[in-house]
Length: 276
Image: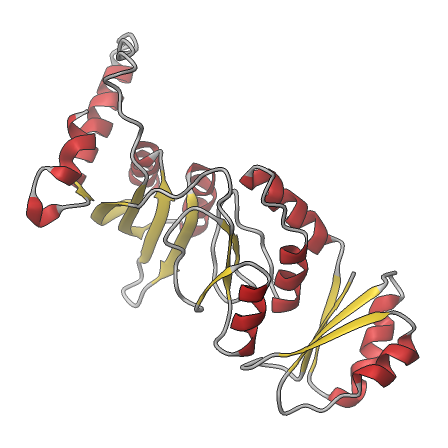
């Protein structure tokens, strides 16, 4: 209870959990377990505050991939980013911060540990956050109902996240979209009435059933579409760089399927193709 109250006790540290206090709680819990002590008696419901939703941040030296696997199930918006000093900068949003810290210390060397309280967001309908480059794609994803953030930016609240190949994020509500065209397809099947993890699973299944490709030479676009359609599909989605000219109507007639084409600013290739 004392730890949960720390964000409100010092004006200069408003919103920040006492990292030393959090570490002490972890050590005391480990000591209790090693001595075989009984579990602490449950507190009365009127006195037990909800476990705070925290952003846990630290520098880490050790097996970064193993850390990623171990921490992934403990929270959302996990980022493990190597830095210039040979370590990794780690950020995760979690209501199980004690477990996060305990696992990190068990797996490697942890320094610069910091915790901050995150604002609460509605849990029933968390919505979707998409990592999107600036320009026309921002408008497209917003119009489809997503909150958009720039590449390299971490989500600041609980939500289903579409990285779109532009950020490396892990967690139970991250849908591993590797291209923008996958993000569009995933967003199209998002059901806000489902629990977040179930909605994310439906979106994962959608992108798993897709065929995608990138085209650097627009003259090869029709051939690439036909190659993807050999595996089945009835909808072709194209993201087209603004300087690339295509005849979408003619391509639609040639392929004999439904086709949607969108201009995509800052696309690194001429065209992204998605077939569903």
